[in-house]
Length: 421
Image (tube, rainbow, N blue to C red):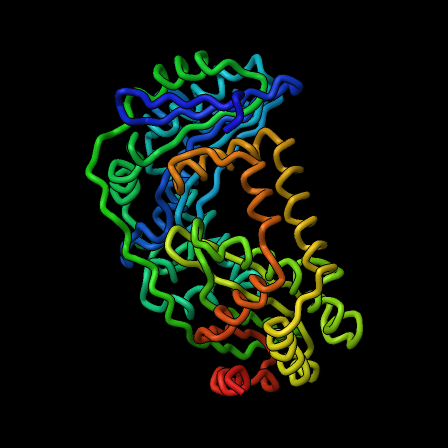
């Protein structure tokens, strides 16, 4: 751990992490809560995201306009996001305005008012967001992919919720979810930039003193099943996501799977891009990705293609999955290593990215992982490791989500037969 990183756990159980970056003039500060979509019940799907929206809509001390103006008056930036495992609230400010940022984040997490009029307005905003996602096929296809991979489970539900649930969600569901999950033990606050650790601790003690206490319930374990989703739509392109079960954070194959994704479909020099776009012209967009979680994860490939091209796309993709299990060159592994290392080290130059990294590492591993340790693990992956992890991943039951003119996209049963051949 860098000597610039400092950690304090307050008597309440809230952990404060800081990393000093002397050569910048800014500071990023965030509160990271271990609660997201997978912590919701089926009846309240979307409440974590709804709550994130409402947190900016007024507190006992500030109106929604007050919150926005206070940050923008000093040229700062405030935002939030919800994922399946986490909700985050963060600000980026000039270093002299850190106190204001901590005050506002603490205020919205401890004293949100959930005004009824604001709630109804924001309900409408979220319904518009759901509608926009439904009208964006290369976005919504990933929700269908997640649902097919984890059917009838919290991990398979959409982060935004559904239109029906959001329309019927009662006001009490939001503060109820906050009281249950926004607790000191389930939250990490982190700050990175030109700062002093003791000052941050003092500010957090002052502005986060009213967090609720509650017994945490463990979420349902993620149980990858795999399956298929198909929807015919009148679109110009078929949107396809093919995926498999993959390692989660901290598993031995985590770094080999990351490197596999990079060399297979992580850039313009990757195998899928070169073979399917550059040589055959079958797609505009194709890439692979990993989606790790605390317990397990997903490895996926996205492609957007025309109806007639879809017939050729899938066999060629599956052929590349077979090839990577047999042969990996030193040159492409070195290139994948360089891409991962560069992405990691470049992210360390951003106070916001670094703030999020240290918080996530603490939540998952209970420690801050030095960049040198991560680089060493990337460097240690061999060609044999890549082949082995590819064989493990691509022999699990696949998940297929397709949307658009999909008459030429093979069914899941055909893909399973081809993978087994």
